[in-house]
Length: 353
Image (cartoon, rainbow, N blue to C red):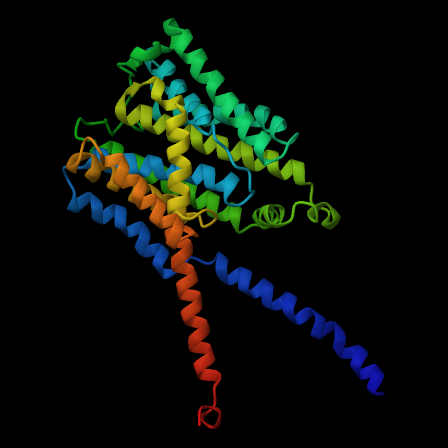
């Protein structure tokens, strides 16, 4: 009788951790109050900093660019040193269409994301053939090739002189881009929020959870029936499309495309931004973009000659004392304080005495 009861209770006992993990996963997928507060900040910034719309637009675009890298690096574990290749494809797509009189902003964004996604899909098969070091070389090689092609074909891209006079028509035929950057800022924030919402749904879906499993243990996932290569190709393509949209936003708000959009410096800065904010948190890339752009702006204004020294010092301190980035370290502190609070509640008065 006792054996039967033990066998009868064992499935529910074994399934308890699974139900608890599923409930925790569902709670994590819900929007938190702090998230609503976070997305109110761009609205507040619109009224508090009326003379800095161009800087705010740059923060939103950089945040979207960092989000694209976070999808492939923070969740799938695919590191890239040439993510600017997709950013540049999106920017030059808008530039080429705009200089030829086709400047509908929404359609140009879609085409920029499409072309960058195609490039990401084609180059993703090269990434699957090697380890992390070879993947770094492949991504860097693709970006360097595109940089030299854009530099050589000056009749198409303008080379080092860039592509000035990119025509951008009013958004939905109603809202024209003004010289103060007001419309461009609102436009950039709306695009960032829409794509962030989609990325959040993606991350908390079964597809996103399989990406976390691939990042933690890529050798075990095929045994669980997960097609690892397909998952990596899909997320790399999506990340490339996001980067292309970010590049298109930069070209539309500035109405100018330079060779800098394909530079190695842009890819390196993007990695720094993601490390600064915290990879694998979605909000980490956006928070890192805010801190990086603001620090860059104020340090270059305060000390034009040696501002990069102070920026490097700040990054070194973050790596030494906040290895999970700003957001990752904050979450560790919160979790540690919660565990200490639980431990205090579970201690009885007799144990304390």
